[in-house]
Structures are given as structure tokens and as C-alpha cells.
Image (tube, rainbow, N blue to C red; front, side, top):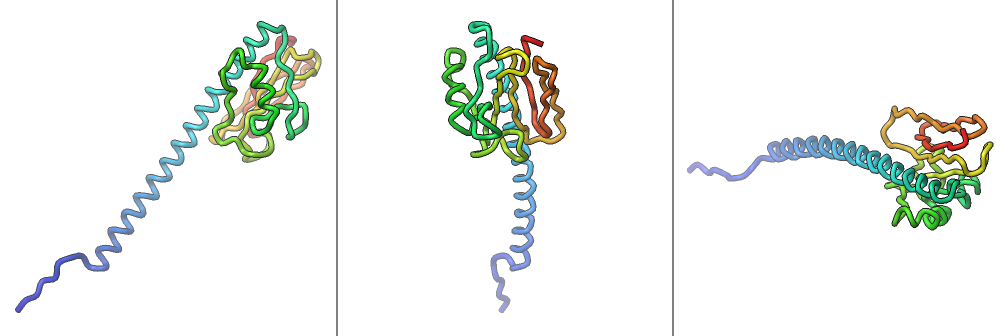
Length: 171
């Protein structure tokens, strides 16, 4: 009598599992790339919103809000990953309901440090008090070239690997 067994052989199962593993790896790689691009688009949009709020603040006050209180790189800055951002939020509250933070928002450091994702704001002197500002942030996509920002005294700020934007009314 001929006995026919139903089911798959071990080899067939291993081949199917291997194919599923390869396809899953390809899908996850593509998904991670899409997530990175989405976070970068969000960063650019949020920085533009902050810049609009800063311009409205300037129009009402004749100067940009004073930065300060950050732990990195020094106390003259405001970072989205520490309490100094709350102070800037208070100043910009009439123009923005909530001051955004970087989607990753690394817990320590500032945007000028490699692999640190945070929004960093600076506005003090450099030739004209509070008549200029800069925002520094980092994109996860590589190869983006930052225009940098020139302060009132002609100093150009452009931190390697970051995007540095701003405005100078006294330049």
C-alpha cells in the first residue's frame, strides 16, 4: 500500500522562511529611509514656523528674543532639549501655541555635536544687540549644504554638518 504524507518538507519550509526574511529586511530598510526623510521634512517645516514667530516677535518688539540658559554649548544658547527652550517658548507664546522640538530631540548636547538632534537658538550681540539670530539644527540626510548666517559684525556662522539659518536686521 502506498502511503502519501501531507505537508511540507523541512527544506521547503526553510526556503520559504529565508525568502520572507530577505523581503522583510528590504521592506524595513525602505521604511527606515522613509522615516528619516519624514523627520527631516518635519524639521524644515518646524524651523520655518519658528522663524515666522521670531519675525512677528521682532515686528512687535524691535528686537529678537534674548537667548540663554542652555547647558550646551554654553549658557548663551537656548536648546530644545533643556529648560532654556521653555524660556524661549514663553517669549514666543503670543505667536506660537507650542514651540516645537526636534523629532528625535537628543537628551543632551546641542545641534553642533555629531549625531545630536536638537533645535538650538542664539541671539545676543555680535555688533548689534538682538538685531540678528540664528537657528542651528541637524538633518539626518547627508549632503545638505547650509547657507550659514552672518552676524552684524560680519562673522559668518556655519557649523559643520548642521543647517544654520537666521536673519540679521542690522547687517
